Structures are given as C-alpha cells and as structure tokens.
Image (cartoon, rainbow, N blue to C red; front, top):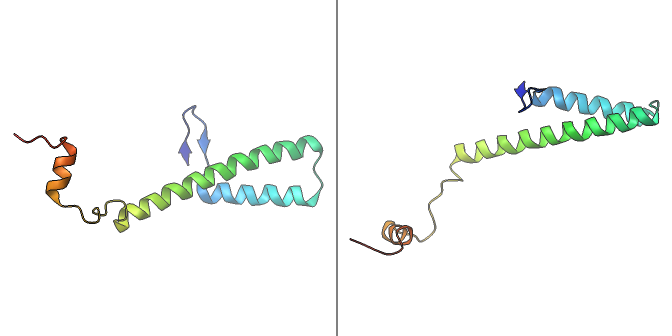
Length: 91
C-alpha cells in the first residue's frame, strides 16, 4: 500500500484493479440506486487513475532498466555536447 499526501493509504495495484472490477460488475448488474451508482462511478475513476499512474511508473522503470532513457544522442560527439552545454565558450 502507498500513502498519499493527506495520510490516505492507496491500495496496491492488484487490490485497486480487483476493487475496480468489482465496482464495474455491480454497476452492470443494475442493482445499485442512483446515488450508489454515482458513488461507484466516482470511486471507479479514482481507482482507474491510481492504476494508470502505477502502470506509467512501472513502464518508466522498465525503460530505465532497458537503457532507453539514457541512449546517447545520434551523431553527437562529446565535444559538441560540451560546446552546447557551456554556450561554446572555452577557457
């Protein structure tokens, strides 16, 4: 579980996904009142956002582990990178 800024604990990805699937099933059954449906929809949006953020973070970690984030620039040499970073001024 992860803590949010306001002390609220977020469920793990797996628990959030299971809760989201449960909410969807309840809503599809049609047995919820209007108020319950609105509350379920709101909670579902929160859970979907949490799951999406966790997936994006995991994808970012995979990219770093695979080295895609730190690929060298195509056709760039060390001298041209140094020149660009210091405005071309050399001592």
